[in-house]
Length: 531
Image (cartoon, rainbow, N blue to C red; front, side):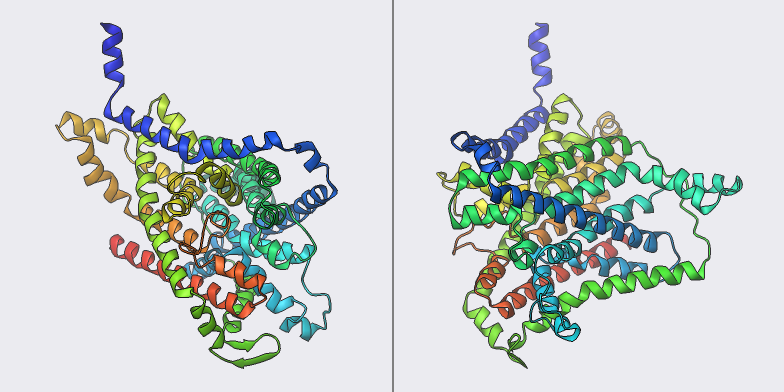
């Protein structure tokens, strides 16, 4: 009787929903990944890893990734200090402009560098550079442009919410600025900085957009994987490379979990007090303006490139490239991208909200399992996820359809929006549902009338995140899209292969315009809600 009663008590609607969600994650993430890794059984893994081509690509990937990560994190630390710890005016504008590079594909950054510093780049001609930007430093510079905004936002949030009380105590004790840095700031930043470093490193080492555009003969693992799978249909070798690319992402995911769990206990007692310092503020303002200028040079260059006749032969203004891009289906592919982005932003956000509620406010042992499965995609690069979907879903009815792209994009970008909702729900009074139950108010009504209204800002940011990333992603969909459902971002790689940089530049400009419009709409809605 007791055992039967126990079983009935445990099998509640919430438990049933959690079991269903776990099964969904099993099919959407775990089994496809296992399917990809299982193909290595028929591959000589050691033989692949011992080839000269693989060893060289691995060493070169590590070299550019470590260099670019160091520069990105240092630059992000400097900029986050300049915005958070000074009294410069127009911080919102600086904050917005510094994150614009996140709104275009990484391959577009590489294209911008070619226009500026390539063999025929306008700055190369001015400076008399013959070799161009191709190779190691080209990948490093492009990777820094692509990754530093993410590192900046992570450090910006860490510094913005630092408790100012220890600094006041240090001031009373007469500690110098140097002592405060080593005794308070650096220990506070140590754990978050580890997560930032690994997250940035993972972004860079798994990206193939920048190396594909400016790498030249300098081969990296993602480019090698892309060429082997797309060009040679060598799925076994692609799986081996995918397994290697999983390692840094998995380490980053584990570190993020450890630091997040310990960081949740932190408490902001008092905002950090900023003193007047004209010299400091002028230096901070100059740093921000220089970086923004450098960021917008390649963006402005490919924006101009889309309206010239033939770069670099004929730089007269023309609409021929725009007409050619439209004739090749740009508007149809843009429509595909909008359908994918809107659908994923709605379905992905709904799934993330439900998942976060089940894990943050309905805690059981099963909730922890669901939480781990929900953040699994943090450790899976887009190329690896796309390849795993090819192998697992190839014989299913959804393969080659929009549903396939809806699913892969939802899973690819799921973890960050999920964690936004998870953190937001975790900060709201945990006794709301219990109080509601004593008053005869159902859990659903508490969610509808209290939790969701308090989380509207977060939900809007979640939808924006899904939308923006779906518009510009190339990696996860490159193995799965076909002519009927092809997103517009894939036209960039198509035009790059055909050496039609002008058309590729126009496509990049379309993506940037749509994403900026989306961010502006979210900003307006959030401001209206705040009023």
